[in-house]
Image (cartoon, rainbow, N blue to C red; front, top):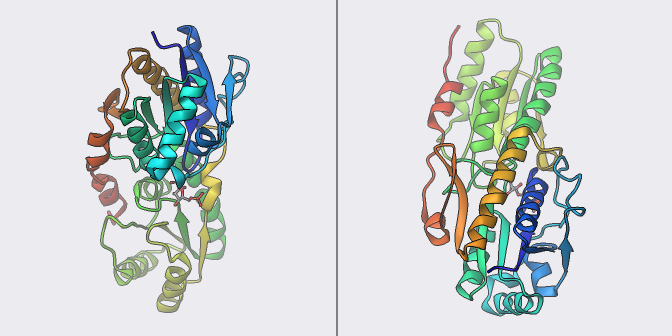
Length: 320
Ligand code: F6P
């Protein structure tokens, strides 16, 4: 019988991580399993920055953004020496399994630790929604809503000044956030890594819209493409439409999680504890066809995730 588990958050924080930590803690306690919060991701595991979590420690956190056990990226854990140190800390604290909440990089560490006999379960937590084995990642919905609200505000001022607003949203390697937010704000265009784009085509579209009486424009650029400033400058130079660039940045990572993020985080957290309780490790919990499921970590890392072409195409429909 499993007596003690740990939980850690790793990589970029995401709204809903606290809800997941809470769910893991409560689910484990309800089964008589002791829970340790491992702080600052794998760094805390290596250093022994480990605290016991009780129902009191996770009370009042479901609505809070960020992560109460802190997060970090850990270079040392990419190497065997670091992983071995982590394993030794687990043995010292009697930790038999760990729920790792984070992205792809964090899951690699979870697979390595599982191979050393410490069962790890990955929970997808990133605002980028760029984890291949799952339709949904914890934090994505909140980040999309935050970006949408911010861009709605930018639209107000773009409208008042008859401007074009070029907004960069997060997503280092993936444009899921950009394309969905662009759709939600009714943007003229979404520029992402996944689809080829031409500024000249976008400019042509702006001219066409202008001819039909449109007097302000919104263009969403994914962080992976970058260059919001340059894009705004080029649009202004070539069209004469006054343009401004805004980089939304880390504001998208904060804030109180939405209902969806809280519920998915809670469901996934409980699911992960059930796996650990059964002595199962080296799995990632994900969502497929709107249902929570689990799959092997290596298989998860090798999967390909389709881009949201339908959403992308819907943005590009022109109708006057
Ligand atoms: O992976 C989440 C994410 O917010 C990316 O969208 C972004 O590129 C990156 O993290 C930023 O990381 P940091 O907080 O280290 O600057």
